[in-house]
Length: 100
Picture 1 (tube, one colour):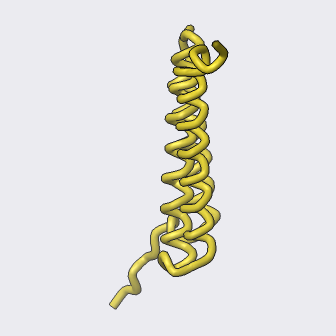
Picture 2 (tube, one colour):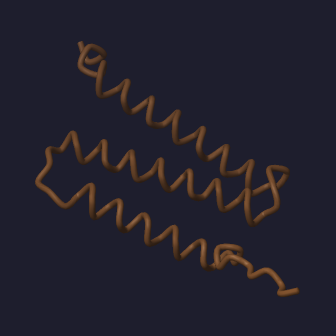
């Protein structure tokens, strides 16, 4: 009986290469045309979200589950990022009223 071939993505280095390639393709797609400053911010948010999701998949697949420090550190950084994004949005939206 032939042994089963392992996927190349079972090696962490291959997954990292795939992650970098996908981020490059998405960034080229998002920034290839002339866009407004508001759309640039949205595109950067999409890239950061994609990067976070890919990092989460990497930690779960290669660090053997969710009971690791890497997983909880990534979740903590994600929550800090969301809190920072909400704070920036709030200041941009309601910052003018706070100046009066």
